[in-house]
Amino acid sequence: MTCKNCIGKPVIQLTNNNVKLCKNHFIKYFEKKVKKTIIKFNLIEKDDKTCVAISGGKDSIAVLNVLSKIKGKDKKFRIEAILIDEGIKDYRDKAMKDAASFCERNNIKLNIFSYKEEFGYTLDEILKKLKIMPCSICGTLRRYLLNKKARELGFTKLATGHNMDDEAQSILMNQLRNNMKVNARLGPINGIKKDSGFVKRIKPLYLMTEKEVASYVFLKGFNVRFAECPYSDVGYRSEVRDLLNNFESKYHGTKDSIVNSFLEILPMLKEKYKEESSLKYCSLCGEPTSKEKCQACVYVKKLTD
Ligand code: SF4
Ligand SMILES: [Zn+2]
Ligand SMILES: [Zn+2]
Image (cartoon, rainbow, N blue to C red; front, side, top):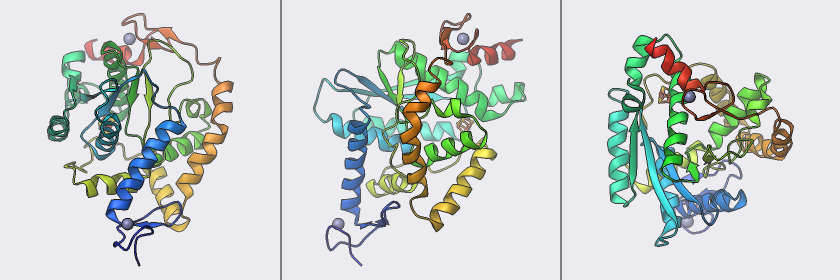
């Protein structure tokens, strides 16, 4: 058995069409498909300044690498990285080192912000004070900081490492919970309404599976850790992830079908929920929100009460 394009030994079988590729052809395939995704969904426009939200994990390093390749020597194409240090002992500090050395080697400016400096507490300290699901407070604070800092630094797009598996899980979770309004905010570009306070979040790995991203990072020899966050939610999402993985192993292309059929109805969902997603500005910090106070301020207030 050889690679579809040469006599090389195959290293991977693509999930949606069973094609087998060697290392070189897989790397080419991966980078080309990410570029095509960016063009197809118009993720980056001519005058955009893009920053990549990195964690040191495989997905964000893959995005950063492909975007820096696209940038090449084009000085007008501005790309930097932004990292949020949540303050998770023995986890984030190691991932931060990997992210920092990747950026240094590739000459990419890395902007680091931390919960400790911005909110007064690390995530470890927050979770000792509040009885709360770690990922719900952590996700809220990270999204808040990423948006605020990216905007203040003058970026117009914020690229994240979400891949096809993440998106298929989110779509299915929202459907199982009858939460179509949340589904309306998904897609390769996040959000329903335009607002100058929001930096649009884009997902260049939207059409790449988790297995493809992991294989790309491994074959490129990038030094990333595959360790899981110690607070990682073992609830609903992980059950949906297992269910989808089981299905995918029996019926190749399941995740691809979920995401592609979702893309067909997404414009209708966005139109339907356009009016319901009214935007206000937080009465405490001035950041965009759908309520009177943003959720980050609600959490911070609980911490200081
Ligand atoms: S797994 Fe949860 S707690 Fe850990 S970094 Fe991600 S959102 Fe934060
Ligand atoms: Zn080949
Ligand atoms: Zn606020």
